[in-house]
Length: 397
Image (cartoon, rainbow, N blue to C red; front, side):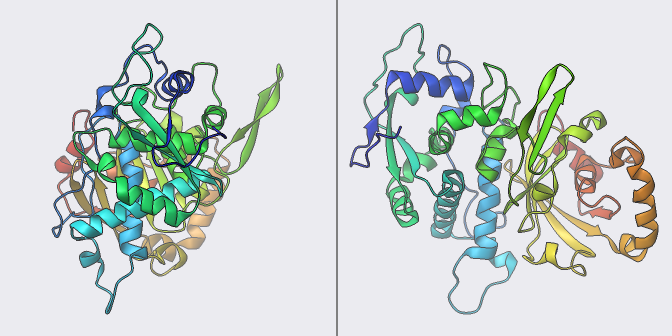
C-alpha cells in the first residue's frame, strides 16, 4: 500500500489485495458478499422537509455504517455548517435543501476518513470498467472489488475536492456506495491494522453475522479503530494459564457517542460503553437497541457541559428506516435527591451485578431502556404510543 500513487486513474487493485480485502471484510473471497453491499447507495430523504437531514435505506447489513454517517451529518448540520446572516433555529437547520444535503455528506465523509487516517494518508476507492481479477475458485467476482482503483491523498481540501468530483459513485442507488465507503475506511486504516484491531482468532472479519452490521464497523468509523472493546483505554486480560494480554478499547473521547442495550442483562458488564463513548463531545449518540441501529441527539451543543440543561431536555431518535421519535428526559428528581442517589450508588457498587439489573424496567419500551443506560434514574416521556415504540425495535421492522 505504501507504493500507491495519486494519479488521474488511481492504482488498479491486485488479486492479492482483493482476496485479502474480501477475507478481512466478509470472511471469504471464494463466495460473494451479502448482496446489499453492492446495491446500497448513500441517499437522503426528500430535501426541504421534515427529516430532510436523514439518510434512508432498507434494514440490512449496511445499517450500522449508515447510522454512523448519519450521526456525523447531524453534527455538521446542527453545529458546523456555515450560515450567512442570522443563524436559523434547529428545526430549520435540520431541513437542508439538496445542495446542503450533498455538502453535509461530503463533509462527513472527509471527517470520518481523517479520523481513521490519524494524520496519515487517506485512501479512497472507486470502481472502473475493467475487472482486474478473473472469476476463480479462490475469488468470486462481486462486480465491484475486482474493478477498484485506489487513490491516496492527505490534505482535507484535496480529499473534499476529490470526493466532490466523484460523489455520484457513492450516492447512486442502487449502487455500491456503502461498500465503497467501507472499503475506503479499511484501506485508510490499512488492512494490517484492521486485522490487529479485531483482536480475534484467525478468521475474524469486519462485517460479522448481525443483520444490521457489526459494532466493529461502528467503532472503526466513530473512533478510527475497528475495536470490539468499548471500555476506556487499555485493559489487560488473562488468567493463570495465560499471560495478561492488552485489550485496546476507546483511547480518546469521541465526538459522537455510543449507547447500547442488547436486551440481555447478562451482557451489560462486558458490553456497556465506557465514559468516552457514553459522554461524547457533542450530544449525538449512535445507538444499538436490541439488534437495531439508530441515532439519538439533542440540538444544544452544551447539553453535556451544562448541569442545568441536563436536568430536563428533549432527545430526538431517528433510524434510517425514516422513523422519528421525540423523547423528554427529566433528571430533576435525581438532582434534587443527589445525596440519596450517592448513597444508593455506593451500595450498588458493592453488588457485583450491573446497576441496570437493579432497575425495574417492566413495561418500559426498548428505547426507554436504552436511554436509561446513560441517564439511569431519569423519568422518560415518549411522544409516541408504546405499541409504536415496540414496533420500531421488533425483529422485522
